Image (cartoon, rainbow, N blue to C red; front, side):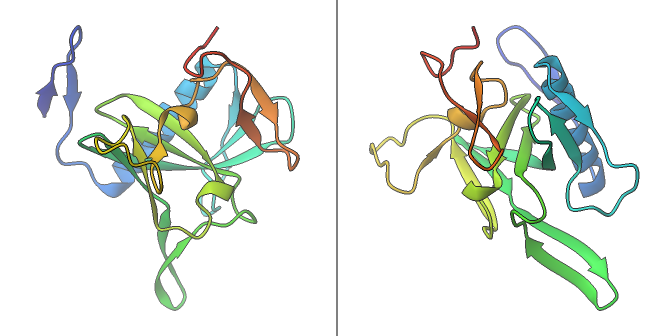
Length: 176
């Protein structure tokens, strides 16, 4: 393990985790963060479904696929692909709205979670979330991370199709 030292705490980052271990850690961290925010979290009884968790925020249930995210500079990289085996061999694909309602991502070095509606990533292999604006002030094709941060916005509104969406707080980073 190597240590990363943010201003007031010491975080140990395991260096030799398997993909299954990373996925398990991501699921636990996302479930814990959602629970701390008052979201009721459930898990399918058996493996093999396209989603890992179910969020109950008082409206329609939300099927959530959990992902381990990596940080490279000021960017959080979220894989939106799945890799599994079936009767024909190794299958790689992306997620659709018929399978999941959102992708949640956990980044260990930041100890942060993001919740991305499937409409924003359906059919995409990956999403890069910017922690800070681009240095050249480019906005086209840039996805800022803050609106997706789990818990960044206190008030959740229901979208027309039942997906929770952020909105209504001022400033946007407010949790009060």
